[in-house]
Image (cartoon, rainbow, N blue to C red; front, side, top):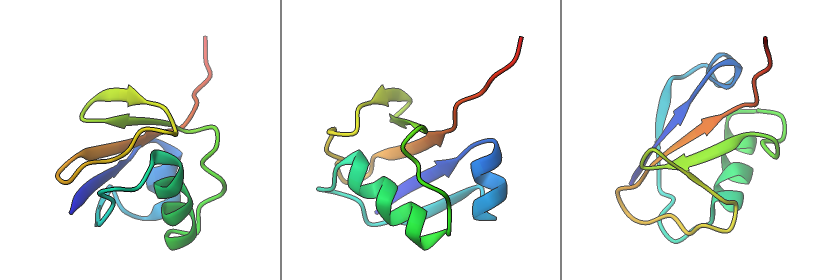
Length: 77
């Protein structure tokens, strides 16, 4: 199993701070699709993903026990 963390407005939209999802062997892009569908989120195309606290591209393959975080783009000044 993998722990998936949601930040900022994604946490509000998902209604949870984190979730346990079987994601080992899937790419970040595949997990984004699963999470968007499961939690009724808009597309996560613009969200950054981090695996074990390091930013990861959509092609990165998730391993058993990895912690994945989805971080939406932020703006400000």
